[in-house]
Amino acid sequence: MNKSELSGFSAVLFEKNVAAGGKRWYTKALSEQTTVTRKRDRERGTSPMEDRKKHWGDRKDGYLIRDLDAMHYVMPHIYPNRCDNEAYISQRVDLTAINAYLAKKNESETEFPYTIFHLIVAAIIKTITLRPKMNRFIANKTMYQRKEVSAAFVVKKQFNDGSEEGLAFLHAKAEETLDTLHAQLKQQILACKDVNKRDSSSDGMDWFNRMPRFLSRFLIWVACKLDKHGHVPNSLIATDPYYASVVLSNLGSIKLKSGYHHLTNWGTCSLFCIIGEKKQNPVFDDQGNVTMKETLDLGLTIDERLADGYYYAKTVRLLNHLLQHPELLELPANEEVDY
Image 1 (spheres, rainbow, N blue to C red):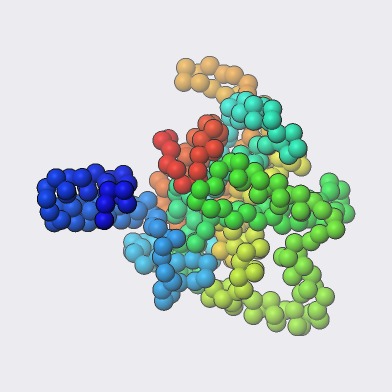
Image 2 (image 1 turned 180 degrees about the horizontal axis):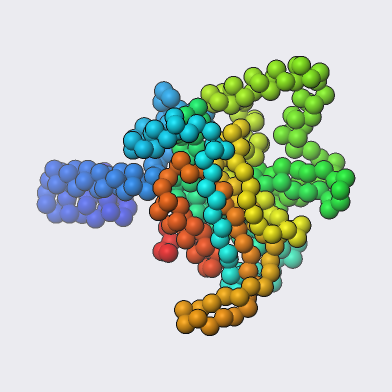
């Protein structure tokens, strides 16, 4: 091994090891660094999932969390249904910084302009990446860490009563940025708006609908049992919005206010985000002075069994910080920020 094969902390240790003329100090120090890193990961609720092999008890879409504290182990047994454990959080977002950022960003983007919705999607994906307990789910009274960060939302093909809806699904990587997510959003939204195309989830539901009722009810019962034990097909996990890390609903696009939306016992989604309509609201500064500013409200429905109130509060603070400083969304999703 030589210094060129190492980087960062390990390279510094290597130099000191060479200077000391032995291997013991380096090995001990590297072991201590690994211990500190693993302790930090446990405190943050994360671990290097990409390198982890599947073990007994894991699901195809999540890893079994084996080091839960007593309370979070017991809670799913006492309160087994996701819909019975909803916590609702409302957050008002000042759009001053977002509007200025979008005006500058769209100077060179005319084909598919960046929107507030795109920024909110990117901010939530970065928040979930940096706050990994938000990417957990409970199934069959057991808590798992999801293997990827994903987001889903419904796209109205046309704004009329008879128009169908399409389901969009984003699979985010650790290094995703606003620009790469914008490219995914463009592809998904344009595909959903195509009146001649249908997403696989809608086709699957139509397949059940065309069957005799007794048969469709039996097959749906079987699907619910497979869902409970984590044996649904990969194709369903990849396209069903209720298997995403977060489901978003942009009610502002149809001139509605933000509000509460329930979770579901089907699937694994533990976070729902409602985006309300933009409007002018009074905003007070530290001295009590009031200014009318354009704002929008976010409504977050969360499975309260995943973490404690402090973790959720810090998560919402990060989300708001990212929206107040949208330039941070140009950084990779897994790059830490101060907030």
